[in-house]
Image: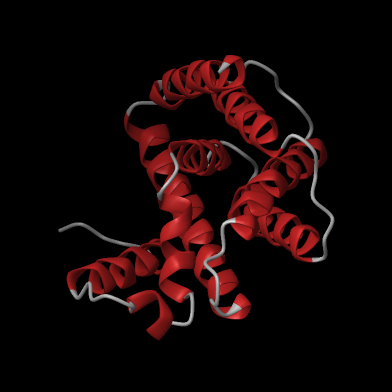
Length: 196
């Protein structure tokens, strides 16, 4: 029997909501959800967002217990800060370059190529995701409820981060170095995004 922790079940909840929403895909569905569905889906629509979030989640499994548990929340905090800055009219320059660099650096962290103290790692996670938050804010559908859209993409961010952490914990016990190989591949993909 497969045991699923409560945290992993919570992480998968946004995906279940998305599946339910797409199964009943009707015209104008985004308007009826007030932006929640658009927010839930947005982090899943870009490979750059997925790679960064999954890599950070996988990497969190190798961190100290307090930092590892905090990483999905730190990722959501970075997204919230980035979106908040954008909605306040403070757009960062080079958002797409920042996102590409975040994928590269998340892969480098996951591959274990540059070990750093926990405090620096925590700041890096938040900083990486600020760029992603800026992009999510800029792509909010016209007429969507800001609160619903924000709640949607934060839920999916938390879910992907926790899913990555749960998979990372399994890999640590079953195939200890596979996450480092995945990190190398993510870093390679990030490098390709950086050079365009």
